[in-house]
Image (cartoon, rainbow, N blue to C red; front, side):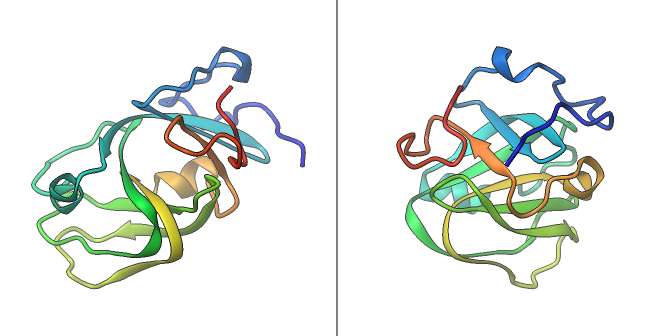
Length: 156
């Protein structure tokens, strides 16, 4: 597959050339055919952090998100209980590939939002943002918490 430059819709996301990107725990780097993006992220890797997530927050910066990281791949289901802002949820496998997206999840909705099996990570970003910038299933995440020997997009 060939990866192209930054799409013009990335006004609020970093438009940094791929060579200048760095892999850090607080950044989620994505690439896909036709674009790339980076998000400043908080990590939720402890059970209490994952349970709290983005509950009760009244806003989320456009270039921000929360990355939920599990100890091993598993079946993942989210909901929006006590979550006040609409979110997109990107369900990511152990190679860093986005396998499913739950888009525009409604605030305070307790409906189960399944992410599928073999989910290692889930990135929550502002609702509708994935569609606006072009992130779809198949997009690849570079992050240091992925096994770099099997990552589809190893850290630059």
